[in-house]
Amino acid sequence: MEKIFWKEKFIAIQERKSLDEFRGRGESLVVISPHPDDDVLGAGGVMIEAAEKGRAVFSVTVTDGRGSPRKGRDISDEEMVEFREKESMAALKVVGAMGGFYFRVKSSDLEGEGGQEVEQGLKGLFEWLTPSEVFLPAPYERHKTHQRVTGLSLEALRSMAAPKPSLFGYSLWGWFFGEKQRLVRDISPFIRKKVEAVLAHATQIAYKNYQQGILGRNNAEAIFWESHEIQKASFVETFLNMTELLERKNLSLDDFIREDVESFIRSFL
Image (cartoon, rainbow, N blue to C red; front, side, top):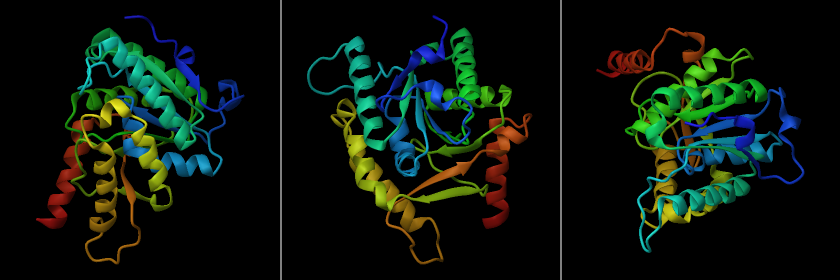
């Protein structure tokens, strides 16, 4: 696998902005996206809010998305890669991101040497940007590529020399089941723009109504998050606080989940 020079993988979304401007600023927000649409689906509202507050928002898309289902006319793998990257850039423009890093890795290359290259690329990126917050798939995802990307990202963050960010997990192909701390963000003012960003992924909504699904999910989370409280928002994004994994370097993702579920058992069973 070709070595990942992470700087060369950056595509600026905002005009007249150089990556050098953000070196070590420490206030940026980074979203790790296993596939080209996971960022706006999982954390689009948070990305929009941060950008509107003047923070630098970046996305890191690890795989090229060539394995996507496709509906309608025949689309080759190479065409799908091109389409999905363009769709991702359009979505990032909607949410106000500074730019995106596109590692363009095949999902099948995430093991072995390929995974090590991704990890090193992520480490260099994190040390350069020194973000204050990183969002990535939570460890409950029923998707092996998501799980692998989370594991590689965690190792990159643990090995970085720069100050560690806060780490939060979003959920798309799973849910949250335990009692570890959750972060709930009211994204009601940003939901229209989030859906607009999701709609930019035309190849994906052609075969699945992601725009309806994420609208319903974010609304359901607002309704069902607190069982004995008045509803406080119309739409929320919820995240699992995973910062503990950076503070306890010997804590595996397996044990993190086990502790989470055991705390649920103690509290409710």
